Image 1 (cartoon, helix red, strand yellow):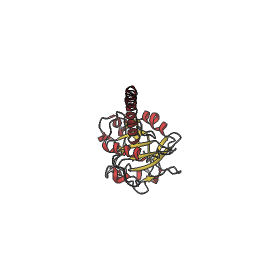
Image 2 (tube, rainbow, N blue to C red):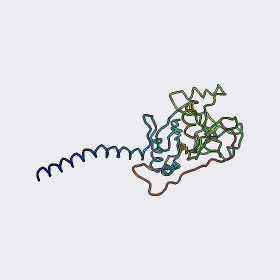
Image 3 (spheres, rainbow, N blue to C red):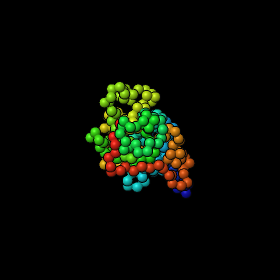
Image 4 (cartoon, rainbow, N blue to C red):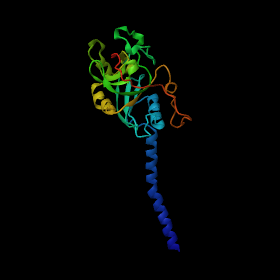
Amino acid sequence: MTRATGGIWIYLLTASLATQPAAAADEVAADRLTRADFRHERASREARHIADWVVHSQDNHAGDHHGLPFVIIDKKDARVFVFDAQGELRGAAAALLGLARGDDAAPGIGDRELSDIRPEEKTTPAGRFVSSLGGNMRGEDVLWVDYGTATSMHRVLTTNPKERRAQRLASATPLDNRISYGCINIPVKFYENVVRPAFTGTQGIVYVLPETRTARQVFASYEVDEPAKSPAKVLTAKAQLRKPALKK
């Protein structure tokens, strides 16, 4: 009787010790499912907030069989973060953005000539955009962020040496990264090695963070530790079939 009781206690103790690592692993796995993994990349609080919210809320449809890659564009920090459908970071890079600060696009700007766009209208619009790869009027492949406003993400343009776009991208500060008509310019290798592979054969979601409003105001997002009680309402733009006027 004593031996049998002792044997039971030894069994229970062994079983308890064996399940502890598994429980810890499950806890880590659960945390990964509700937060984005930035790896060791630096990112602002708002960028992390939106990325975590996307993963936790499955706003990129990660809960079904059509989970989509997503991109966070932090205008204030002039940074781009590309994630897979599960929220694992594929890569990050500096970006050039619209010359003018603001979160709204001028009416009809996607159909206007570049020469007709005033400096204060050269904004990169904030919002949630269903985006896909396509071609522009120069015959180059780009990621169309928002067809309606002719906003795309593409390789950095260096056709005008006076703009020093490559040097602006390489600088250590985001203060000189406002130069484009509204498009997002990124390093050539980053586009070809990270952005294009992530969106090949699929659509994705691009979240352009605001700079005149808060992310919560634009995306109706929430902290992952305080889930929303109802589905979030977001500003959404879907890709259209027509090819918009060229912006750069």
